[in-house]
Image (cartoon, rainbow, N blue to C red; front, side, top):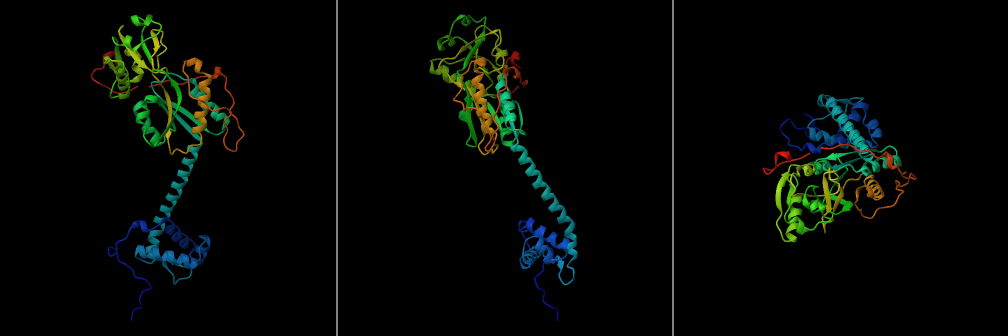
Length: 370
């Protein structure tokens, strides 16, 4: 009479099982027994009792549907099925260990670097780069980088981890989603720009009544719809519908789209080319604008807060260069918890910064604005 097997075995195709029932821990236990050729030695290495190890291997064998070890032999030997799985599961375990190591390295790199983006239409604001240099001096080992980012892509870059902080226009605030944290770093009025040949340029200040006869150069609604919305809401509040001269494909091209003596651009003080010698610039009454620092609410990078606080201090120090006023700032020195490193001041003679890029379309765009 045949001896009844200790445990029921299943032929291929007779048992349905969920692959998730096999854990990486079980695979590691299998490999330990295969390498040590002993349940007792493998149990000691894996910090288990021998009965607990045997129970887990038995559960694995139930899922596989075959015995993996010949327990009658001394030392313990792999069965044909166990031998077939050995090299494959070794490779799986190795890949798993490597992926965990890579994830740890990536996490460590993220914690020791800060990547900052600035809306691509912005002119050079030295404080952004200077704040990064001071941060790196205060926290040795941190890597800092920044670049101009096309308006339409900054959310994607935040979500993918390519950026830690984005500096974008305050007029975007109504569109910020719940997964974002943000904070104003520059507060300033909106500006009205026109060619010096425009008769209005002779005035000391400008009113909405003056703008009633002017034509507005506006961002393409496809590129930045809130620009047109902002202009229309403000002019309607003062009793008139804005006349549109043309649409610009990109924010950075607004100034270059000014062609005639009855055209104006409404913009921010940090727009590139706003300080051109061919322009007359006025503050637009009763308006507020600026730049917001925006980051993912669950971004645990410890350098986000120190950088923003330091940037506010530097923007306050150099605001006379740009003519804006900023929100309340924190006070230097800024130091890491448990660290006595204070961030040294960098002389203004060291101020330097990069160059920039463009954006989308609408059919009312003139050839001059392409």
